[in-house]
Image 1 (spheres, rainbow, N blue to C red):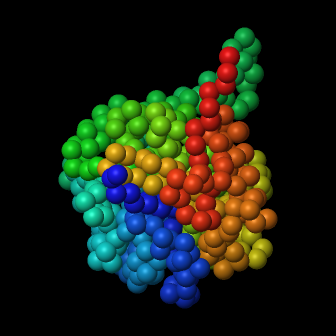
Image 2 (image 1 turned 60 degrees about the vertical axis):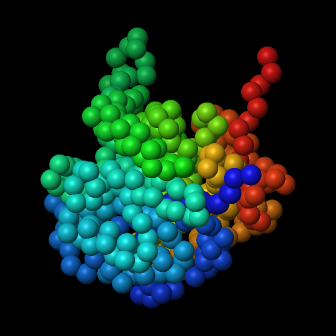
Image 3 (image 1 turned 90 degrees about the horizontal axis):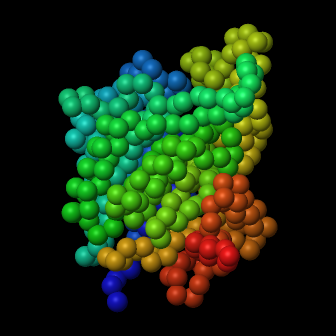
Length: 399
């Protein structure tokens, strides 16, 4: 039997607190069980930076604040997200070099388009696991070009059409559909083909989705996830939405549409938004418009959670666990966790009250988007760790 290893994956991770050494201490025991640990580096670690012109509110922290990521066990991180170039090109490259200096491989960004699209290969014994990372959500200009640093993009045009085709109804919310950039799709397929020649197992991560609503998946997420698997990817990992999303199996390969955030520090939010003029308003009318856009899911200070200004649903998180061998995916699961008042992810047993709440939420994420996935206790032969649930394709309904 081929040797098996466990890939652990979490969503957004960024450390910006008074005592950075305290970060992720409560998660180390959970993460230490993974042979490879992946996360999305949701910001810039650099002591010298210059705000990118199209940046919203910069997510930048001193370079030394990255050190706890290595202590927590991270072995590979994506740099393809909407904050990776907040501090400018030089700071983005500093972040990359800082992480690599800590022994953490990176994917999804580089000094030019070729580097941004390179596969990061992590070896465990004779098994080679590759990671490709892309962003669909990011400010204009963050994408890498032939001689310009940046991230690997997977963009799309949005099309807005009315729901009712038999009447005029001005001002109603439209139906939104998307059309991926052909050049980005072609480049992605080439990346996958090249990576497959180098690795036994291939993982692709994507920064995508709608953070303003729970549960929902855009058609761009579904289209690209299926394209990834059809092109040769074994595991798809999504992030950006700040709240968990459902899990689907396509051709037997797991697609984790959204892993939420795991530890994402956003201190002093009110001051930052007022200074940056981002997601904040200067007039009552503009404030009303923002409230109508985001509703209860608007990013705003939350009582008792000074580092986590997101809706309470975002405090439910966890770790994707995928057992793999040279033949591909063996089993897929999820270890639930909750984020406490210190903004630390704390693992919880699936059968505990807090664990059931997270697992039930994950089930609802699947149900709301009609994803045919069962969430169940691990099978004896799954190899999944204690404290996890197993994810399996739901059987086809009998006719």
